Image: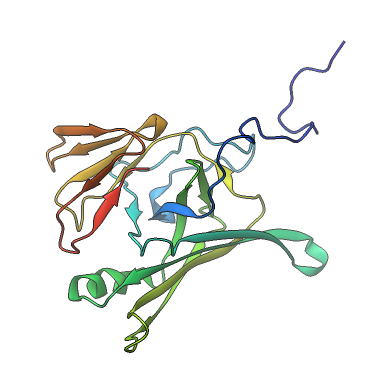
Length: 220
């Protein structure tokens, strides 16, 4: 008689979607301070279906230069203690602007958990409240042959690899005229500050939000 299913048992490794298009790169990255978590699923299956955040907690998006977002996760030896997973999420924020500089200043010194959605539509959690990511950024004014802007990194070590995430998350409206709610299945609800739903945008569609940064959002 076969053993009952156990998510921690070995199994044949394959991807049911391996015949579909495989697009490299990230579509979007969000982050939130570790203080926003009431608890964390440290043990149990790798896949996370819901997060336990404090009331009013939101995520913030790093709206980066198209094509600049990337993620790398690799084992890292820490001597006799064994291996951990080292994570690096990178991107570029274009141009210098007063509003952007003001938003970047409080990033230093805090610790974060991040979410990313890749261009195949998969969402992963990076970092934990106990094993957080740290922020770093550098600015260059560029030259006549190089654009100016900020190169940023969120990096850290965790005991477990990136955690696939199947839940939803609330995105801050700071810096935007509208709030975004990322719902199950990748759809996004556009809401006013009062919470009124203005539109539901399905995955794969694009919409431009007029903001202080004059940025376009793509719902992916």
